[in-house]
Length: 193
Image 1 (cartoon, rainbow, N blue to C red):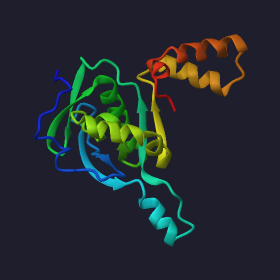
Image 2 (image 1 turned 45 degrees about the vertical axis):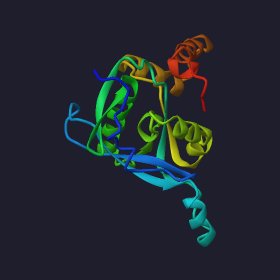
Image 3 (image 1 turned 60 degrees about the vertical axis):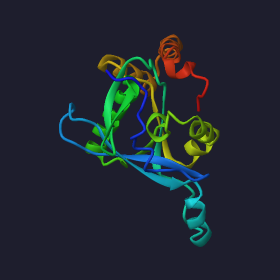
Image 4 (image 1 turned 120 degrees about the vertical axis):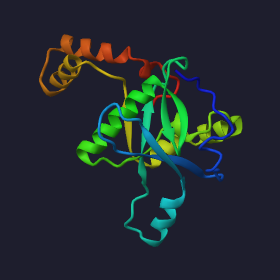
């Protein structure tokens, strides 16, 4: 497994950011769950929807990307994705989220464009991280939707959660499900939507 340290020949070097810009990534749909995850970065302005809205008042102010909210998990355990032709190490939790996102894109035609901090922010640049973190609230607000990745669940856990939410389980059963959910790493982060 690779470390999270990137070299200077990185995908971020060819996609510099302006003051109100962010990078988003398109995920390539591929056959087979074990196919490498391939991403293509592009730069967009957080202000671009406002410009369109000024000329087309009926246009909403959302940009066409999905913001991915997840817990990084251990930085020691990583997997590789291919980003603009470069091998990039990401945490196993983000890797699992990207695999699931790619699967859903293929099955349901979900928009393949997303924002995730590990991919879209140059993690080697303190200046860029500071600038982008200051805009994170707006990044999540301006996306078409926010996807919350709580991690992989067993089929039984997933069914139990769905059943609990769909049926009128007893208060004790619902409390048990919610307590289990609240112990997930995502809820322990400092930055929770």
